[in-house]
Amino acid sequence: MSYQLHQTQSDFFKALAHPTRLQILEFLKPGERCVCEIFPALAMEQSNVSRHLAVLKKEGLLQSRKDGLKVIYRISDPRINEIVELSAKITRQIWHDKAIGIC
Amino acid sequence: MSYQLHQTQSDFFKALAHPTRLQILEFLKPGERCVCEIFPALAMEQSNVSRHLAVLKKEGLLQSRKDGLKVIYRISDPRINEIVELSAKITRQIWHDKAIGIC
DNA sequence: CTACTATATGCTTATATATGCATATAGTAG
DNA sequence: CTACTATATGCATATATAAGCATATAGTAG
Image 1 (cartoon, each protein chain N blue to C red):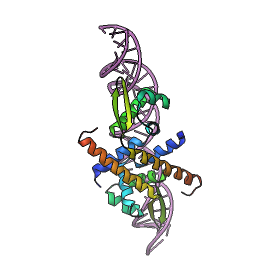
Image 2 (cartoon, rainbow over the protein chains, first blue to last red):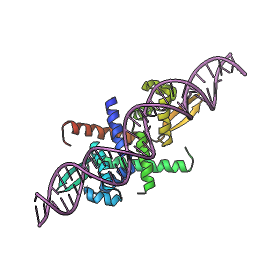
Image 3 (cartoon, protein in one colour):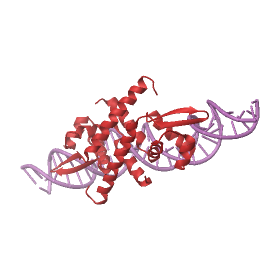
Image 4 (cartoon, chains in turn cyan, orange, yellow, green):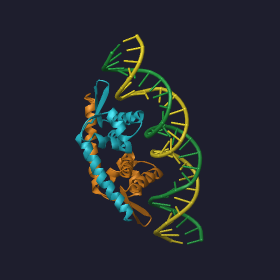
């Protein structure tokens, strides 16, 4: 696999590597939402959430459209949900394994 | 989903979010390898690779065992390969979409 | 035009991460 | 014991990321 692809792939994972961005993806799972719905749901600063949305969009995980003043974001590929769900399963397992000292 | 789990999950993605660590996972896909095989294969400093291995191990993606002087690492869960492969597919798609200007 | 609303961005500061070099540690061999 | 090999770690430095606050921008309403 090329270095270029590994770089792009690691940027993709970097976008997923923040609790707030995982919260955003979870919140958007049922469907598209505007920023005005997202940041109150996460109880975070509007500017902070806006930057996290920009990261997710820049790496291609989200797409957006304008509706009047509002900007509405959606998950760009359903496989992103698959990855998040699969990682949650593994994470739970790792967590459990660590707790009982297998590792 | 709990904040604690989102935190652990983002640490998991953080471990995946580096080209060198993706190279390591790809190199270990066929089976376990000692550090002495890994760092020459990646053409990187031994100390640098050692730290990346430590990150992957700390987050539960790798496990290790000693064999004399050597330390042998292996991927701890086959689903980790699934995630890497799925992300490669999505990444290729994103890359392609960006190239033809869909986003 | 002005006033307002929704979102994005500039600036600063704090914190985290990656790397190289040198060195420490653990195990082997003689 | 000493010499050697494989791996890990301390330290210094460079770079990246995150957050808050203030402000800019884009669109709406009157």
